[in-house]
Image (cartoon, rainbow over all chains, first blue to last red; front, side):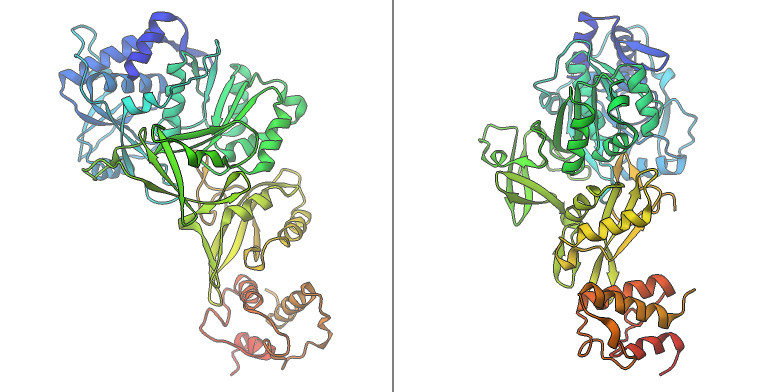
Length: 453
Length: 79
């Protein structure tokens, strides 16, 4: 359980930082003391379900560990929400209590200040029978949903943590995200240190990675592409990276090559995971896509996969129990929404079922276009999407962020030339240069960009 | 804002040139389908360019002009 992982860490290396920021840190033993104080408070007040609006990662970690000690269902809300959005979420997810260190005036929920919740003395609650948690989806491909999770299942999915001593993991996700929870679990399971940057802006994150000697970093391909654009072979030598993990979005192969060139000493892994089904597979061979062998996993596997009508389906023992509002626990195969193609011994991601573009009856998968365009010299990021058109129903258009110093006219010519290899219906009819793509949790929000325009 | 006739003719020329054809014989009364043999993707691209340039285009307005001049007339307000 989460609290047990913290207890093990505190017993083995009490003074080691579990969370570190530039200029301060919280040790394993300090975090455990805080978690046990909060567990008493949750127990004494009989708080069974709550939302967390706590932005200090040390406090948040302690609160999550406390919830696993009492069996209270914690739900971490995204960072920096305004009061109105918090109120909306409490109503959507029926949260009777909000635990926070902010000054909040909510009408639909009871607000409990974090400091008031702490109880220094008294017996600790006995171990609960269930360990629920509610994790919100990022909502990059639709509305935000709540997934009912179980800490026991989540912890069991981290069976083989990377236990190299002195590991320092970057937190490049919000802990409200499933990927952020996964990073937390890996840190606790391997008794490592979580390094928290002051923001997720790539330049600032890089500064913290260098200053605090981050060894393990898990982030989205979008994030890594921005990082790759800021570094060259010389400046990349200033980093101590041993492990680079990419997940949450399809990984373009040019990006894998860029990262291998910049960080030749690091192992590069791609994780196929989702809030709904957990972490399905980690691939370390430097090729994009998944090995075909994942389709042959036996019945004892935590996560099995199959392809039905071009869409990947998953059967998971470590995934969510169901969505919030669904009373029944789900144990069957679930569609992932990820469209795939088998090429040789590899499963390649070609798009999302909800994003497929229909150009006069020809189905176009936007990721195929994006993969091609992001490989063009001078392109930092690209996002293809369908635009309504009276003649063909939809046409393909693409938003592009150019690399600093690139000449947009030349880049556009190269994109057009490169896209000549695509079937005519898949060629973008408009290439729009934008200063940035809209991101949520460092994942590109699908659809046309409104960011920075 | 550019002149609609210029944009229309330039776009059709670009489409023909991309196909490897000489657009020298581009006459205002040329039939987009029979004479110029534009396919639906090329017509769609013409409509995208016109919509971006002028905020509207004949196809989005429910019209299906047959000739170059009919597209021009959409912007001139002529029948």
